[in-house]
Image (cartoon, rainbow, N blue to C red; front, side, top):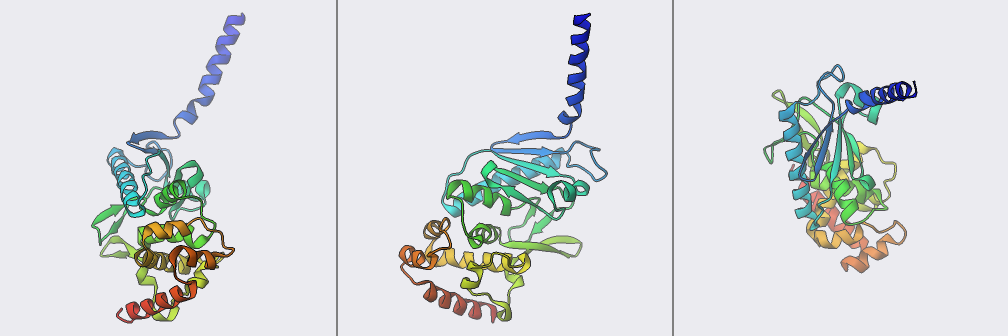
Length: 262
């Protein structure tokens, strides 16, 4: 009787956890571990094997590109959880993209059946560089204290914000397309932009950070990445050899010249 009872308990235990095992399809390639929903999990489609392979290849390429740009050698595993479109809003708070948990080296993102297109580099975008930048920069350089660096790095390296439809194709929009002479933000404004609307802040922070990389070198800007807000301006001069005010004036002069041609 005891054996039968133990057997029944074992069967109930195993079957009670069976649905959990079917929630994700796990696929690994190099250091990218991709979790996708099985076919029929929700009303919207899950990625098929071809899309899974394309997303894995994109992740591998993103890691390589970011390592080269930042001058780091990140090679740890990154876990990517891809939620179907009709569940993403409830599960991760958005069905328009996703986010990263850098400390755990995880990306939570929405699966879009129709990917974006990067016309400049002629490649499809399923997740893109942005969230990978967060994971790699935090784990290779350090945890930033200022939003300008947290998001500025990701927006600069990704180079896009949102997308628009062009002849039936979703084209990723360059950050420059959101900026004009009348709305250029000063670096000092971006530095204290804790609550600034994402639609203004993301493109501007990305454009500024790209300029900062070119002006002072990525290696130098990486030293600014982890600085706290307190005494940042003084530390900026110590690290770059130029005052924050002089840098700001040069940046605004550059922006006026650049966007007057647009």
